[in-house]
Length: 155
Image (cartoon, rainbow, N blue to C red; front, side, top):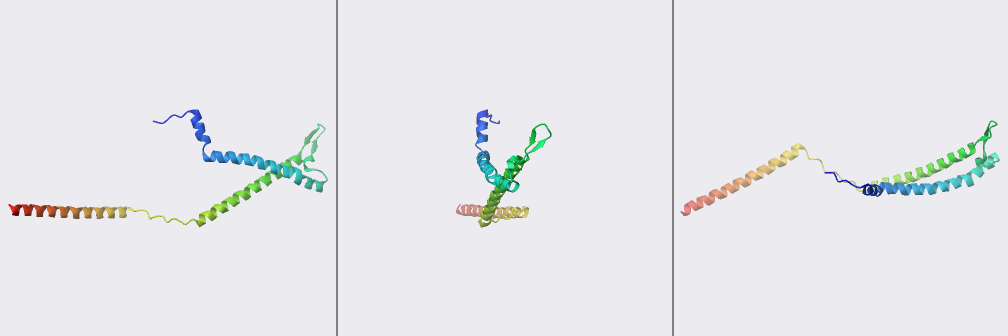
């Protein structure tokens, strides 16, 4: 019969799984890293690009008619740069991890797998065991016969 778990116990088991904790840590670090990349783009890259175009990238806008609505394509370009930088750093980190795992796997001695037993091997083992058993039975029968013969001779 399946054991019923309470909601709290089930939630605790879910939270305590290693991959959930790793994911939570990754999200927190990712948020902090995103703030660093955003600052890099807003405070360093955008002003440098602004030197080329004589304005800050975030200030690039296009008015949409006489409505006063502005299309802020400069902010969109900044967001694209943020994304590309975060993706590049994550790619480099994952690439380094994969290389480290490949090196670790390469350094480990490969375990040779024992060849799988075939039916023929098993049948051969059974035959050998039966032959041994038959031999033991014959020896036992001979001892019993000798004991009976000795007992009969004594009478």
